[in-house]
Length: 311
Image 1 (cartoon, helix red, strand yellow):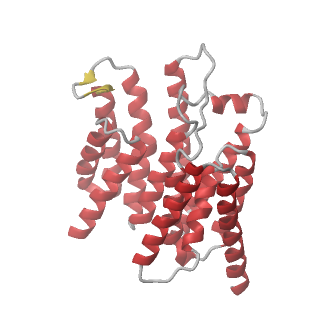
Image 2 (image 1 turned 90 degrees about the vertical axis):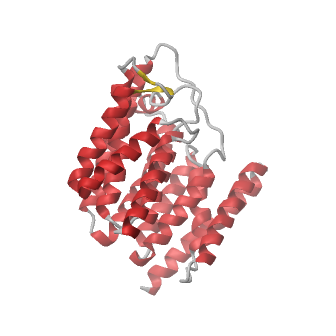
């Protein structure tokens, strides 16, 4: 047990030290400032909690490093190291891992501006369809991992899947793997940071894992983020009737989003799923300049937190 703790401690401190060194050596003030902000946020929550967690602040730096080196060759190795740590850590530190990952990955967003410009000739509807089909597939894998893992390790299984995903995509994008590499590159829209949507999706998932205790509520968040969002996009692209308050969203897509969340939710949490579905569909349909992978997660987490307090 002590040897396991010593290894975890050594891996975490080594990666945290490298995160600091990396920020200084790159000579990019924005990168260092974001790392400092991430550590400051981690420290604030660390001080707020009553239990002493020695590795909490270094963990924030580790996950920040994994996020900010995304798509670089070394990012894959660091993600693998982060995953190794997750597999070694004690189960009773699960909540701290989730919070550290949430803060670290959140502040790593836009630390590096990486854009992928797609080749001309691709049909936007085909690109969106492929993206959404892949998102549904990933959602199924995450839901399966969460459902099949032992209850005390379910959150860690999802976190491990997220970190492994970072490493897997980094490897593909930095290697010439023929059609596989081209497929992933063609998933992204033109003129946006590559995989920014996927990163916000991971952050939204980590938010629900950090706050919610009910497995059924977490599974409903997964259904909303991965299944309802993708299906609504596919259906909405084929509809010409747009919402009067947001011409980027359609009535058909919003209705589909509501029905899918309500259907999944009814089997998971009962009649309250109608309220959750209505809130999620409304938030997803309104343009508030926040990625809808994040704002829907925030809305559902707040809704369930209030419901759990009143129940």
